[in-house]
Length: 132
Image (cartoon, rainbow, N blue to C red; front, side):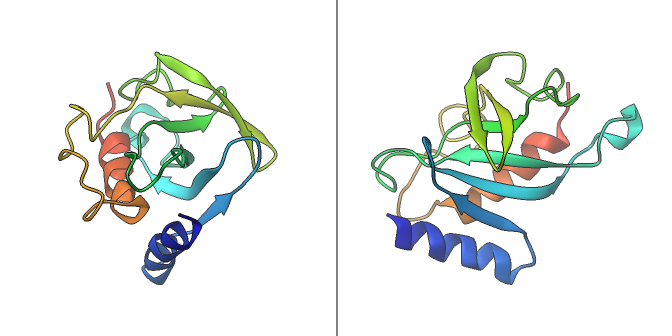
């Protein structure tokens, strides 16, 4: 599992995205400086995002996304007000949002042979581009 995640993250890094795998009480992928549509509302134009690595990955689909606890984006992102728990990573507290792109949330159905953390990045960009 770790080797596959690292390959997917290497593809993102090759494209210029800052991303890292963080292990701890819960293993997550940290995407740094993901662009948002916040500027017209006076909200951040980029944010860090964490995504839990599911047990059984890649057979188990990637699901959820978290923003820094207290982020002004949480009330306006899809699923943000529906708290799915807190995670500590990178020395910060994170709130997981009810975001499920591969399970009726706007993305294609999960296919472990086609999807991964490299493709989930696109789902995160779309998520942060559509603020409520």
